Amino acid sequence: AQSVTQLGSHVSVSEGALVLLRCNYSSSVPPYLFWYVQYPNQGLQLLLKYTSAATLVKGINGFEAEFKKSETSFHLTKPSAHMSDAAEYFCAVSDTPGNTGKLIFGQGTTLQVKP
Amino acid sequence: DTGVSQDPRHKITKRGQNVTFRCDPISEHNRLYWYRQTLGQGPEFLTYFQNEAQLEKSRLLSDRFSAERPKGSFSTLEIQRTEQGDSAMYLCASSHSSAERMGLFFGSGTQLSVL
Image 1 (cartoon, rainbow over the protein chains, first blue to last red):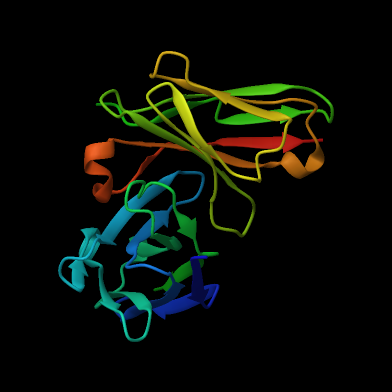
Image 2 (cartoon, each protein chain N blue to C red):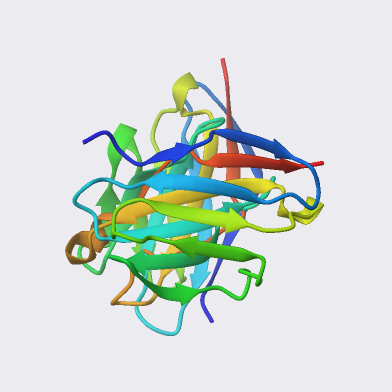
């Protein structure tokens, strides 16, 4: 069965520093991978997705992620953190080609950005 | 396109009462999903519809839970005889089956508190 592990439930960076949020997955078939962001008291917003095209995926707000099959990883990065990036981030996997809306989410990583 | 809307945003109820939540998806989306998110966890898949047909239900969805999408538009999620363990954020999401690689569009959720 597929699963997602997000390493580090809390990550703290200074404004302007590199953001790195880690995600590892397990899947029996080539997966579709997603990163979502959740601000307090709001739903989830899609940041970016990997669906078997380019392994380096660019998303909104300057975020990007690289799919590494050999490492079963899909880490999220941003070169320079902004205060507005403080939120909860979720990595998710779907390995059901006919239903990519059925997602398995990781437990989330809270990103804190210090001034 | 007003996005996915959920009503109510918050619901407080006493143990044993029945509650019903409503979700209005993006109008052209034929798939509708329900997820549940407890504090400090990622969302968990509950069920999904394609048009008016409920195609899959998670084992998390006990007999006290029922979901409908009678005309293939809005959906309702009812919980009968609520328990304290039902306290969670209930998220609705929608997509179109032909464009699901684009990711799900989530509503802001209904926060349920069972006292």
